[in-house]
Length: 325
Image: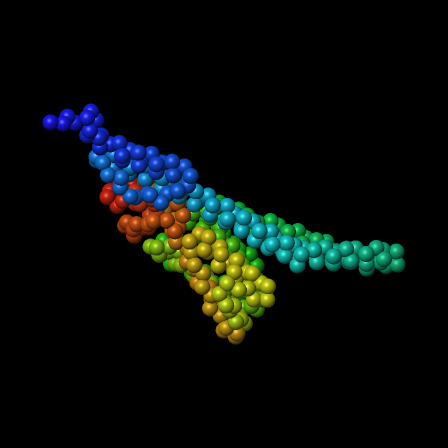
């Protein structure tokens, strides 16, 4: 009769633990393909595997979030640099050239007609005051302080009613219970409306603008409509005549998980329909407090949408939502 060699029965933990070690090493290289796949073994080993999956999901989401943040930051910086350059070239530089020419005329008039020179100096003074206000407006547009201090709606009201005595006239309609978005979403929406407002004032020759904000359960729905001259919308992804305003607005909405649709035709005005989804609780996973984006896993509870960094956090929330709300 043959005797069984010592160690014939292998420890049931060995192979599963070796697999977990292999997966941990893979995660350090950025390979998360094995997440969610069981390794077998005892219940304790499976519990360890699930804990590692949650950790791996957090690391993966952190990497994705960092990449998206870097891309969004780079795009936003370039877009703002281009906008400020155009603003300074088209407005401030032209005014400075005109002021320089006015100073030359005053210098020539000082000797032969001091009275006329004095009158021209008064005009120059008023032009300088107007230019100072314009520069202050550019500075405020770079980072609107009202957006951080007061919120999206007051900041938009200040933007659209800054020149209330000029066309187009603005009507703002708000439906639902106002709530804050995450800072990135609020800034993106503010910039979109800023661009739309600039287009209506400078190019559309509109007399009336209606802005509607509807706070729904899934996100903020915004409609911006003017009665201007309208235009033929470009095909998807293309910028008409080298103008990238519309493309930039679409990219801003997409970066925060939203959408932007445009309707226009010559003589019929222009309408923008914007959707910005709500993020998690103040932009964080209610389970682990990680930052989450608007395109993360979501679950609705008591008419609010909560977002999660991983399936594990989502499952935990759905099992006991009242514990985390």
